[in-house]
View (spheres, rainbow, N blue to C red):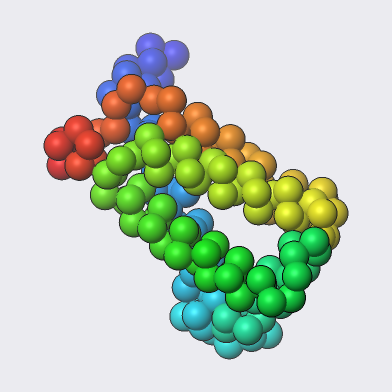
Length: 151
C-alpha cells in the first residue's frame, strides 16, 4: 500500500498531461479517419474513410440542420478538432482548449443522441470525454506545456 501511494505521488500532476493527450488523440484520430488516413470507406476499423461519408454522418447526428448547412457543420467540426487537438498536445491556452473540447464533445454527444440514440453516445464514451474536457479546464497546472513553460 505504501509503495502504491509513493507511486501516485511521483506521477501527481501528470494526469493532466494524460487527459490532454487522450483528448487530442481522439480528435486527431477522427480527423485522420475522415481524410482516409486510417483506410478507405468500409475498411476495417474505419468509421468514415473520406469526407463525403463524414458529411453524411454529420447529417445523421444533426437531423435539424438544413442540407445546405451540413458542409459548414462538417468543416467547422473538423477545423475545431484539429485546432483543439494541437492546442492540447502543446499545452497552449490549455484551459480554453480543454473547455472548448468539453463543449464540442457535449454537442457531439447531444447530436449522437438526437440522431442515433443515447446508447451510441454512451458506447462511444462521448459524455465521459466531454466531462474530461470540462474537468481538465479546471486544473491549476499543466506540466509539459507551453502554458507552464515546463517542457
